[in-house]
Amino acid sequence: MQESIRKEVTVSEFLFDCWKDENEYYLEKLDRYMTERVSEAASREMVSLVAQTRYVELLEIGRASLQGTFTADELYLLLNAYPQPWWPELNGGHGCFFASLISTEYVGDDEPTPAIEELIRKLCNLDVLQQMALTDVFERAWRSQKHPVDSALEVLS
Image (cartoon, rainbow, N blue to C red; front, side):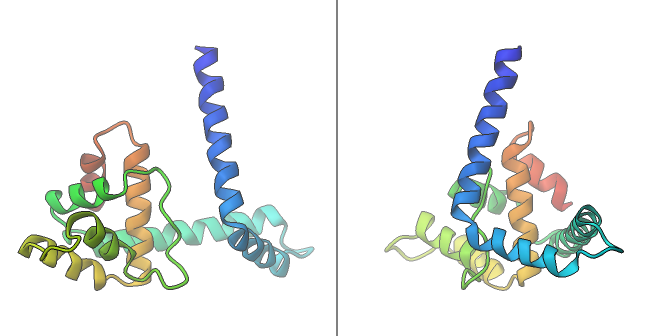
């Protein structure tokens, strides 16, 4: 049992280190954010907690706006197009990341089926908040003990 826990911590630490290496820009941006807000009246911990609370609220608003948008089949296609516990950041021109992912994975050089066309249309119409919320849903789904589609459906219903 202890060996298993140690391995999980090691894998988790490794993944976190990899994420930090690939996201230096965001870490620097976060550090600037924190530095600009910390004062005698607001500790780094308080600023961090307030920011996290706001982030969670924004994700909940985004998830609520997605309820009923996707079918189980569409979620299955999305989850299987990129089966990873960490999804790419959606900044810097990745506005149609999900649509591009579906197009690359399921269309290629062929004409998309009507179902794929409808999914791509839905994905291209997502605003930034909805994209971030959907990313969070998928990351949670791949880390869940449940089947990823069941997990995603539960969060989006």
